View 1 (cartoon, rainbow, N blue to C red):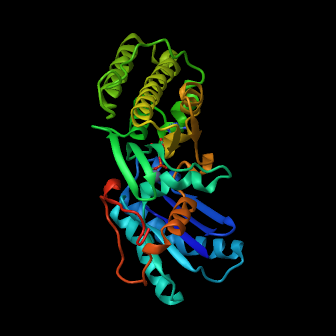
View 2: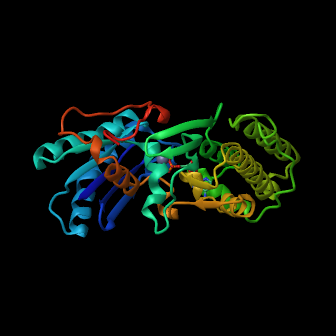
View 3: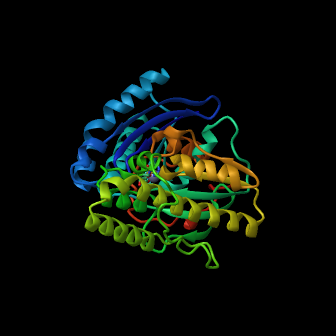
Length: 337
Ligand code: KG4
Ligand code: ZN
């Protein structure tokens, strides 16, 4: 069974062909980062229009790469995400599904992130704890099986990736800020500034990043007033990154302990962060699983593998399914599973 995966929830057009028997066969990605950079963030209408331009040629390329004319199943991201962008992928899935007489399965974007490590050679077994850290979400989830998710904690304000992006903006770095901030931090001293680790000492598994962002803003203003910002930018970046990573690792360790889970999946864009990976390896007393770096951020491969695992939920191509908001813990195991 060959599954075509389509991801268009935000600013990446991702497509892939995944075979239930042979694994990942082909994948392509077009990033819109350059289009949105001048606005300092994703402009939804520009995102939708670019998905319209890119999607069909990318699908043709990935089918050519896979050496097939049509897939046996189409999986598309149905939410959560930007509604116009989701409609482009959902519309394409419905149209191609009708033309090819091929079933379509809607995929939850965060379930895609959660299942991305299943594309790797040593995939995690259930149950595991998942830390999903992206530009829009920060979630700690007890995963007992496919579609058996209990959200243990989430963010009360900014998502982890959003905190990286906003802090990067304060430091004058280009969008998307996460990778740029991580690069700048390499040259900095992470003990130079004392920054809060929000919620770390509080019971429960929720996160909050807005206080940390405000603390950075005050440091930046102080340095601007003193005229030392240029000299201090790397130290501030390193201190922020250390505080954010300490919080993510600390809460994950606590959640794993309290749930008795010895496997941890880290996925989503911030999962690409090198300090986060190093600190998890050092402090987590169990096995940590990641998608390969290219599949931490949005991509079609994770949607294709999620679609393959959820093939029982597929139906004939019909109305376009797109949901801007969609809570992960409302998902259920696949039909009959
Ligand atoms: O999962 P993703 O591609 O898109 C969403 O679904 O949001 O995540 C994008 C987020 C952005 O906020 C980006 O700045 C962050 O992931 N990110 C990073 C790194 N690479 C990407 N944050 C910290 N360190 C990185 N190396
Ligand atoms: Zn994502």
